[in-house]
Image 1: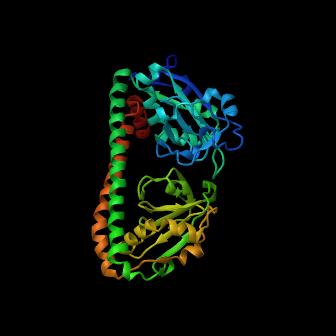
Image 2: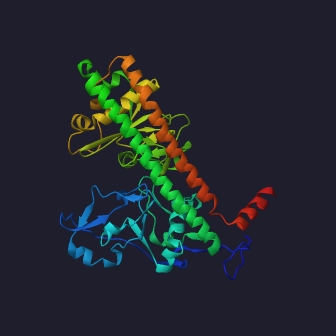
Image 3: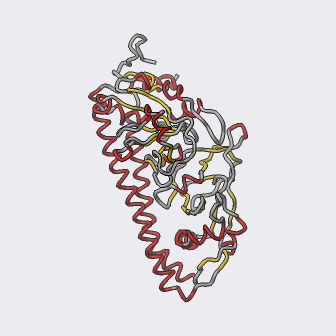
Length: 403
């Protein structure tokens, strides 16, 4: 282990300590245990499901009564608090922003609060990235229990080993992290805008040029529709495959799903191939994205396979443009799952192949630009994570492997 027993410091000057004991960490706590009923005039409360892709989604927040909030002021949010998911997508994070000042969090969310020094020296940024590394994710998953609704005890988050480099190296890596975060945010906007532009072109093709050609072809006539399944554990056998939860589709910032927070186990060859469209509902909303990785769709979702790119690109934008009609026709206002039977009968605008091919020639480069932006995000993440390993530990692992 190339580590001195007395100080916890490696030969290269890195230190390893439990998360809650790191210099710069003020406290680690979880949120409201008994929130009570939703109070429309109460204090916003962030739940695990509200933390999506590194940010707080405030479109459908729960609210707690003022009296409940007063009893839980220790978890009233401050800007720069790090929020960590404890239930479901274990280890996902978001940073509290100024507009979240005074909000609270649910029991399913942990708050890591930092001292002024911890914010100034980059400890907060380092920990946020550390929680996304494979070693941190693997340990947190191992400490959680359950298959579909894994829960991480707060004590295990507090005891998570975190390695910190010497200050001069940390300053450099934290600077790289912040640059990567800004570029990642820009790339995500580029990906979203590229698909919005494709949507705009589709609207012209479908609702102007092709308005008189509307034929009402049922979904089942142009593609294969299958239902999603629940996530299972490794004890069920098979191979590990990315598992897409409905919320990941519903809250995706782009039209392409290129990663998932969870995996499941399934027989070889049963995953949906890249290019499969995933349709997920919630009350009053239906969302469609394209999976660009092999994936198993979660329960309550539908997976759609087409024969070729032309059909896939047209169908993706047709479903996106008809999200409201899909909601009313396939699930009803209060349903949380889609009826495959009703969905399969939904009438599509399916013009002649020439018009669909013409649209695909315009839309495909926009999709390619969106995917290139997402691919660069992966490369940026790998670059940063590669800088977060103690070189003396890495050398020790290499020597052990050589033996």
